[in-house]
Image (cartoon, rainbow, N blue to C red):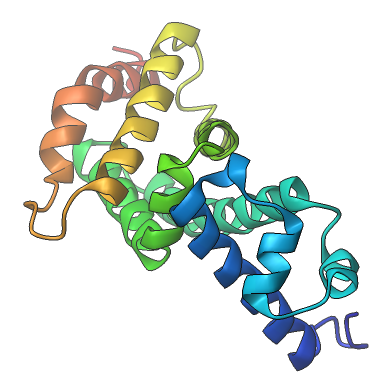
Length: 199
């Protein structure tokens, strides 16, 4: 399937794109639980054999789509987190990381919106929460000793913010990430900085 240099053949890319586009249309129309592989292949105008060359079933397709989105989100925010680690941890750096995550998610806003509002949303919510935890692991030395309760608060809050961002109308006011970070992460950031300075 992949060429010697590791890239995908153009025909494979086109087929996978057609499958994913059909999948999103159908999930939005019927909900994940009510679509079949046949629905997807009919909509994508491909044979069932072609579908099964790429995916085991609709659950495998959903899983791979979610993994692609999470990989993109993790690497983008991970780079920003590493840049911010060189600076002092503060409200500004937290807001910049959130803004970076928001801009990455905005590139695939429709995919997130459909997945987060469909009957198969449990999988993407779990994967988003796992990615947030992995991102927090990047700064585990900075947040060492922070309670699991606080971590869960951050994970739940960030997941809720993502769902809010992708399901809101386009004319909704832009989120003020600085205010959000100040209100919800201010005490945590102060605690991190006190630990780092020994005060």
